[in-house]
Length: 592
Image 1: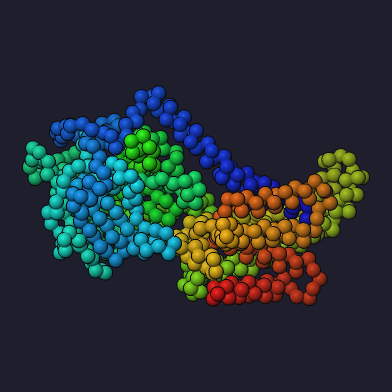
Image 2: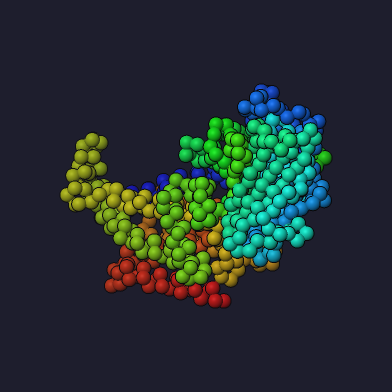
């Protein structure tokens, strides 16, 4: 029992250190690291010109013979013309694509997206407005919009496009797509000296993936110049939002490896180049990905501050990829990070979902949650049922751990006598090993089963934390969003009821277990329990995770109670009865 408690204490210490570092240390140091990176970049001569203020004349487009590659830094150059305000783009005319899954608005100034609303995902809980993956800044400041074209020395930020052709019929610039249909829209933007940009967009009504074919023409003949497509995302998130909704860049390299890094790791106006099949910007539940043929140095990620006069409005996160050589073809995915949808879209986009080191367990557990929800009709009940199932499956391991710990406890008098009689450490270890062998006791038997359960715990933790299905998913009573922290409103107070119950249950479990003889060890275990419970009250977890913790700890208390007692009922029967009772209570709560 003493070895078991020591193992638990070590595990809790490691967990607290990791969580403390993530919640306390990292947010405080991120800004300092960012400023240091900027200082070094400026010392090295990196410019930090804002995209919203770049102005110059349009240079002559490079001849094909001189356009074999992109000059250093030119791919990151913001633009050669002043970036327009979103209101200016809208005033220049808009093409609307109204599909069953989304509604997209394309501004004819720049040929870029003004909005991309996902009809199946609300912006806020119980809100009527769909979630928009093209957020605009609140001050209508000049802002780069997604699907911009960039080439050496020039971009289409102010090019005025017109619809040169479409496979469907429009009503005042609006195209409505029926289920199972496709739509192709051709845009052309004319420039002086016989130059023009073309963009051909091919949408499918049942997919968040669409194709883009872009080209630069001179006298209607394509020019062989490096052509890049950019996705720009504006955001202004608080520290708490960043914790609950982390933003990351992801790249699938031509070597098949996925590279992911937080947006805070990118130095402003100092792009990171890469060689990728696709590059994406993602939040916890949504991504925007640019997909092209893999090539050397064909992609980049960057970020820029967006300002209105002297006021900082937020950040613009940039992903850019080069179109396929000599064809200008690429694909774009704008939608949810739903494993099934991403897997169907192809290009290994499902790898943008990060379930961590134990993803090999996280994905099957995520599938089970969906499976149980389809049967039970409630994600909260699905979490409860899956937790009960896992606890039942691990009961033999739990019993073996408890039996081993109890056997070790029974050997304590003999072990103490050996320690008092034998002072030589080597001889003492030999006698201890002989005693364990004679009694058939494994000193690690109480610890090993605990560590066998850790991968399942973290796999389920990651699955619940990153499952888009839990977003705005109602459970019962005041728990209306399993992806958000749970609070019960009492006047001006917001009380995390479930987390408080979890904390009290942890103390109950601590005091109900046999106490170690060492007072210092008892105090340490008590302090660790208090820190563990208090930390998640101050820094709340999504309510779906708290629901899992609540069910898990009550089942653990039930199993431990029956394993320690001399009652006739077996722990297996007790687990079954307690599981039925807990699930029944959860079901009743969903009816209230």
